[in-house]
Amino acid sequence: MEEKKVVLKLENVSKSFAKVENDDVTHALSSVSTIMESGEFISLVGPSGCGKSTILRLVAGLIHPTTGSVTVDGKEVEGPAPDRGMVFQKPTLFPWLTVEKNIAFSLQMQGKLKGNEDRVEEMIKVIGLENFREDYPAQLSGGMAQRVALVRSLINEPNILLLDEPLGALDAFTRMNMQDEILKIWRKRKQLAIMVTHDVDEAIYMGTRVLVMDANPGRIVADIKIEEEFPRDRSSAAFVAYRNDILNKLHFGGNKAE
Amino acid sequence: MSHKENISVDGKLTRQQLKELETKKMTPLQKFFELVIMILPLVCGIIAILEYKLIPDKSMNNNPNTYLWVLVGLVIAYNVYGWFSAYRRVKGDKSVYEKLRFRAPLYSALFLLLAFYDYMTIKTGVLTQPFVPCMNFILNAAIRDYKMILECTVHTLWLLFLGYTSGVVLGLITGITCGYSKRCRYWVDPVIKFLGPIPTSTWIPIMMVVASSLFGGAVFIIALGSWFAVTVASMTGISNVDKDYFEAARTLGATGRQLVFRVAIPHAMPSILSGCTQAMSSSCTAIMIAEMLGVKAGLGWYMNWSKSWASYDKMFAALFVICIIFTLVTKGLEAVKRHVLRWQNGAEK
Image (cartoon, rainbow over all chains, first blue to last red; front, top):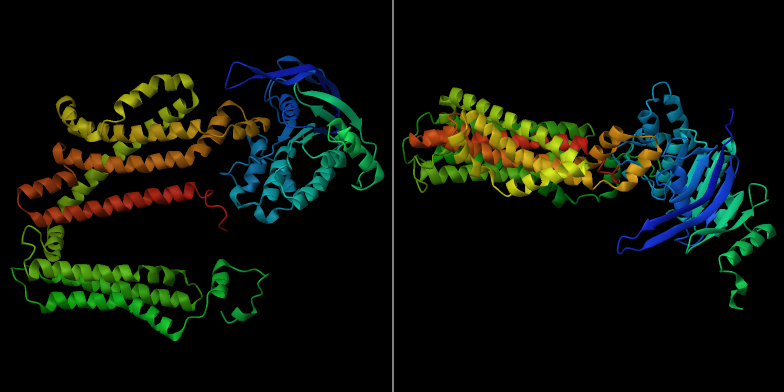
């Protein structure tokens, strides 16, 4: 399939939120600039409050920057669109729809379901839930639900895939399985994927680039290219070196005491 | 079920097979006890028949066989049901049997209650005739006057239908718009706060003065009560929709109206339906009061009317009919609710 190349540009993006309790304002992001392209898998890693989710939500178009601009191929992002698919930490499957209908939701909303039923079928096969198509989300395990959520946005073949800590709520084994599944899906189409995570290992294991962020105000402190072949070995020397480097930048390094 | 021993636990196993595998074998004493419970309704039914036939009546009893036939009919019905369940059980479907086994003690109690009531009324007169008529009187009255009772039932149901549906439809419209639009809520909230606490029956005297037709007035009152319940329920339902669902839906390409009809309303459905149930119970109350006080037809009116003619048997007959139709209406609503909200009973598979 012919892949559309996209360039995502953040130029001097700042985002501030008004606090609920008083008149103060939180500076979630402070003049962040970066460029991302199709074929990249970007991991955003950093402590809470560093604005990593804010970046995703800005790209998704769910919120708008206070100053600066977010552009895809030179065009300003104005609102959410199915070509920028997003997977949230909670699966947010619609509990009143079956697995099959949840996956078909997006096509149906865009009036494209007719004639594309085979795509729904294909997505169900990708995650191997053929026997669960008539089940409701309440009957699924956390991992299954998150798989459904993943293909629910993948069905639009988005040029940009936004993953907001999608594996954060899963147990360690399911998590490792799904890391590989997501990578497999991404390597097939090589769209631009941006994933938020708290887990430095996950960031290195999956990312072609890791953006290390820090809080107060939210900013990017390091932009590290991971030059390792997939599949990566979590215990290789290079992997460990990357990990130490990133942990140091997050002030968790071993030589912190000095 | 000859292959019962061969079921491997990891193979395909139905819920019923699983249950059978996990339940302990019954001891002979337990089996005997089960059998007694299944037969008990029959015994109690026969007791009721004997009580009616053998003890002499204290007062005049016309057409004495009506009640007798009903009792016999009930006993036969239990019998047929019992044999049917046994047949299904042999065929491997235990569900009918289990349902019957669950209800058997209740059926026994019902027969005993009938016998006891009969003894207290016609046999001893502890409950004075004709003020508390015995079952035979009530049944005879219902048969004698069935045309009128039927007419009144249709009238009551029609009134209930008109009032309830118009109230629910209007309630859904206001509730959903108000749940969604702050400006709409600004105007409707005071109306709800002001009118809400007033019980529906309060409006009846006013309706009798103001309304040109009492029927229309009654429809209005029933509708008002259901409108209120449904509006409040759907308003809270819609405004409590999790923001995450809207965000997910928007990233999936849903816009404007789709967010309302495909996300907000389905999400608010449990709340909306519980509003509908509440509206039904308020409608049932309102309709009876309206018919007893003003409207010149319907079962409520019929009860009042037979009371003034001292036909207490008819009054009780109407009471039973009211009980039956309201039970059926509520059951129907429950069934709709269960079907619409089938996605809620997760976990269980």
